[in-house]
Length: 230
Ligand SMILES: NC(=O)c1ccc[n+]([C@@H]2O[C@H](COP(=O)([O-])OP(=O)(O)OC[C@H]3O[C@@H](n4cnc5c(N)ncnc54)[C@H](O)[C@@H]3O)[C@@H](O)[C@H]2O)c1
Image (cartoon, rainbow, N blue to C red; front, side):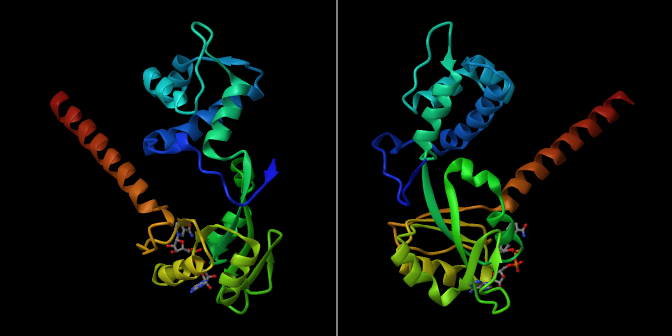
């Protein structure tokens, strides 16, 4: 893996629908599982069946990566894994700074799965003097005041926010001062950044809302079936 902190922007990524970008990691994970069990080829139908997705949608998503399957043969598993890695920029290492070395921050720092996606959290920052100067999962925790200068010096362009919601804007401002290009925000707060900065908000409430609503509907359905039977 090449060690660069800034991903090159690929022309083909422009205008890729977000749902496609969200499905590609699902294909990637499945393909890796298939490779582990020794499978060398795969079709859209098989991927679609495994992931409960429409095969045509799968083909369209995969086409976005520039990979075209062979009729009646499908795709070479290894080639498709490489194509998805390259398309998502996971084939190169991206260094990241994390702000807020609390429960979630520590968990993210210790998560080995990020290496697979090329994400490398190289340092964390916190305001708590008891946390500063500690080493967590091999990463140094520094005082937040050091962030902008160090970020510029190390040319780190990716920031992760895991501070309380009330502190999220301050964390974002310091990342912007350090020249951040992309922020992964786990705090349930809207942050305001210049247009050049990309932000993804990871909001558990939204996923939970989808799950709870589906569960409520299912329960209502089974209740009404029970009523109509009796
Ligand atoms: N813990 C979870 O499972 C979880 C899940 C989803 C989202 N979140 C969100 O992630 C954020 C962190 O949650 P947590 O449970 O890790 O909280 P936490 O209290 O354990 O950790 C927050 C850390 O941020 C530090 N901090 C506070 N203000 C700061 C500032 N201005 N600059 C730098 N560091 C600062 C604190 O000292 C602390 O170490 C919250 O916004 C929470 O809503 C948490």
